[in-house]
Length: 260
Ligand SMILES: [Zn+2]
Ligand SMILES: [Zn+2]
Image (tube, rainbow, N blue to C red):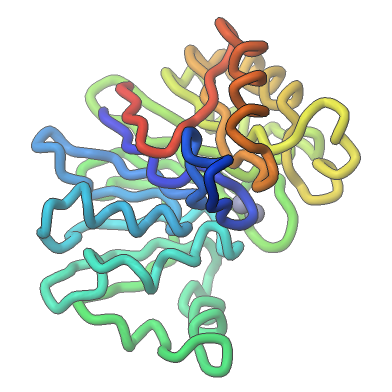
């Protein structure tokens, strides 16, 4: 599988010259099929706008699966030209039993000019369930975070698998997440906070880097890529971190492609 990292920032976008090497867009990951076409997308942060470039002028026709509905995982949804066009086909998978309801709150005046039904194309809003999505075996499990239901996502195809847990606090309990991510070839995990920031990580339901390393070891993940970088963590800080973690974990960079 080929994964295109379209947004690796947490909480809020981070534009500006100090953020060009790792990128400032919030959470979004596209899975490319054998033709190089993105048909499965995980999360719809502002990085979702990058989907248009991957599609080379074609409409998006596939599924978007959201880990959860926090702004940094949703805000790109109404702003991606590849989705908002008459020939687009979008199956939007959201956690929770009544998935359309929070989306309609998020996208409604005076918070936003149009509702979800104002987006062009053929849209379906679905409650995420484990099963086959766009030819991939997709499994989800509720994991520990704060502020609503959050899913971890595992995607498998052709004997390889990766797990995507951009917002996760292993400190608050990690049994379901460990089972979901067991023996994955690649784990993309929350690495928003440093060891000295454990208090704030716990308060917001996120991981410190040591939390993420320990979790990856418990899962026996073969490769660990840390994502959801703090919005204030400039490129120079992330370069230092990447060097310190060399041989143990990598840091996600917007624009990178990962092969699983
Ligand atoms: Zn987030
Ligand atoms: Zn979150």
